[in-house]
Amino acid sequence: MVGQLIIMRHGQSEWTRPNVNRFAGWVDVDLSTHGRQQAKRAGELLTECDIYPDLVFTSVLRRSIITANLILDKIDRLWIPVERSWRLNERHYGAFQGQTRPAMLKQYGTAAFKIYRRSYDVAPPAIARNSPYSQANDPRYGSRYKDHIDAIEPARITAESLQDLQKRFYPYWEARIAPQILAGKTVLVVTHGSVVRVLIKMLEHISQQAIRNVNVPTGVPMIYRFTTSPAGRLVPLKAGEYLDPDAATSGIAQVVALGETSKNT
Ligand SMILES: O=C(O)[C@@H](CO)OP(=O)(O)O
Image (cartoon, rainbow, N blue to C red; front, side, top):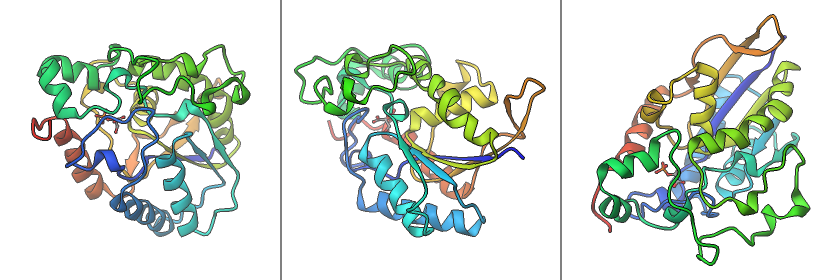
């Protein structure tokens, strides 16, 4: 029997609090108090829905790692195997990292801001190597932790479009995550908004234009159940479903609102 996928964005981070409202990308921002509560609630939801993950994948950023740990603690599954990869990181936000959304909105104007934030193939301006928000010298992206899946060197990434993210995520999905689901496992992936958007795009064949309007709430698990194609590939039985649709709707509205305020510059 084919397994299932629970995928979700981490709980609210310190920088997605409306009064802070900074772009994070690869900056290793902590969860807010509310984000921790959301993670515990996600664990309760899994229990209520009788979903018990066999293994968990996270990014190498603490907002994803801590969210996963709080969930696993809640469901008494801290013992399951875990794998972390930079390929599950948020999109690298380039020079926008560490800047407030209102400041970038003011600097670039509504149209360009929206393109940088939600288009498929346009990356924000590159970050300077000596920026305090650059990860060029961060050991977690160094050769010591190379995964040998392809030749992409994370330490050299200075900005990503959603398409760039897909190029580094897809091989990992194929090599590490999809085989587990095909083997019948219940897989929990605790990742970031842009990774969830890419996965929805891939699994549900969303167009480059339509994906611009897809936003992902913090801390709400989404489930995909699958069958297989004649070629043995995963085919979702239906669109991903949030385990708490009301929380997802209000969370999505909050994400959209973060990019619409010109306050807090
Ligand atoms: O800051 C970021 O890295 C992302 C996700 O929090 O922001 P946005 O939703 O604006 O793309």
